[in-house]
Length: 237
Ligand SMILES: O=C(O)CCC(=O)C(=O)O
Image 1 (spheres, helix red, strand yellow):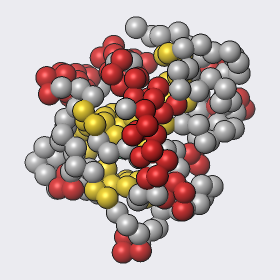
Image 2 (cartoon, rainbow, N blue to C red):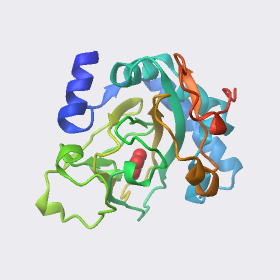
Image 3 (cartoon, rainbow, N blue to C red):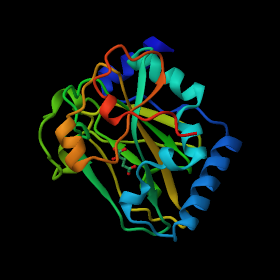
Image 4 (cartoon, helix red, strand yellow):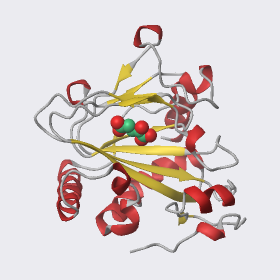
């Protein structure tokens, strides 16, 4: 498993979708999300979709499922820190798009090289409902330090990931990715978890002024550094 995942990650910047949850588990998590959303009043402010793992037991369980962490460990190593999550929710017939971008440029970390997003499909995700699109190899070939979003689709290779509920892809913070509108009659739902290693320092001033909602949780292994104790939290559930 380790070599296939790390080879794909280093060559393409992402891993082809792999099953992590079975259909019943994915259905459970999708229902749990929709119930949590209902409690917060339906169509949410996007900020309210961040940090579900700190507030909802189901989301923390999903984020720390051994089968998921095994894959993250295969790519990042044995000591793992979960530091953010976001539910990417597009209601039916939603015009919301996510323009091309690479994530790392937005993050308050000193070493952006060591990071992995696990992006878990909780509904089917495909071209017709605004599934995840990636530019293979862009983590190597495109700038890491710029907020480019106006990429002409005809100038880059694009892969539209086709995912069934419970499958996950994993991608580099430097991979350019995005998504189109949901033209279907069903919600398109995915949960993105951000992982790093304990030796990666977060920028304390930036976290405290603008990213106060980020928390580091050691979900596997040992923290020998304690650089980020100012933002650490014990497992919430
Ligand atoms: O799910 C999407 O539409 C976008 C995901 C994304 O940008 C991310 O996880 O960083």
